[in-house]
Image (cartoon, rainbow, N blue to C red; front, side, top):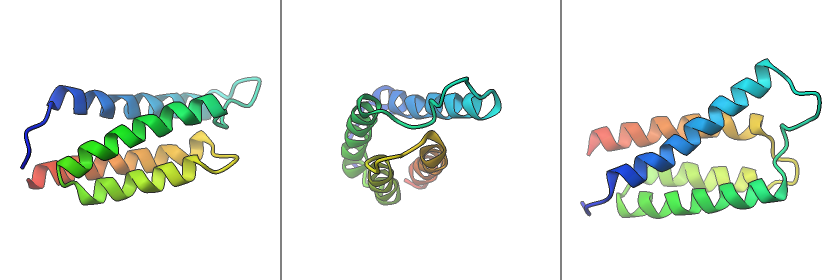
Length: 104
């Protein structure tokens, strides 16, 4: 297996964890305006983050995690993609990464 920068990889995973916390906060304490739908700027940011994570998954041969990232990017690209659509997929991604890394 190819060597990789674990701190960089885990930093990306922490970004996804932060998104889940934000989604839980929004769900439990709804704001006065709808912030549950990603705007184009947010979509561009997250698409770039997912693409970078895909590269790491390819290098590390994390096949299931890579497939999950493709699914995430597809859902994110939808016109009205919302936090509630993405957060369960990110949770599943985190679980897949952990399982696949543990199996290596």
